[in-house]
Image (cartoon, rainbow, N blue to C red; front, side, top):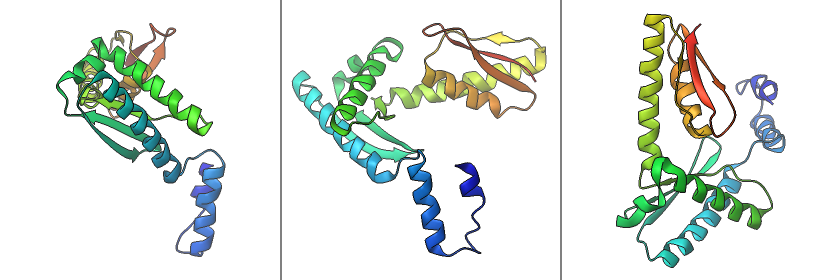
Length: 185
């Protein structure tokens, strides 16, 4: 897939050729924005019904980012209850929402759910943790094993570590005890 896109030079090829390459990328496993918008709409409807059943207030926002439907619920007082300790309820609701989308579309969804900005705030905390731990490893030369994390959390930490020269990271263990290890490169 990457070779198909890398070999296209938009200045030398016609617009039709460039468009054809984009369509081929979608056929090879990429998801176009129309499909992601549909997933977001289905997820939004599902979550709206859930909020109504719970009698919780919240505004649902739909977006498409990095090849994923992003659904956010903000504004209600009770929303913290839908996040749970360390995001456990949020993770469960995300999985249920993905299943609702799959039931409707017949395809597995990779949508991301955020409630009350918890995931966005957690992402910033994890970026800082990854960066500061990477700098500690760089100065001490000692490897550091972090606490077990969800796949979302590990991905954010790995990305933050990758931005620091001289250190690397990998995941070890099995879920739910899988963790990030940061070590000198």
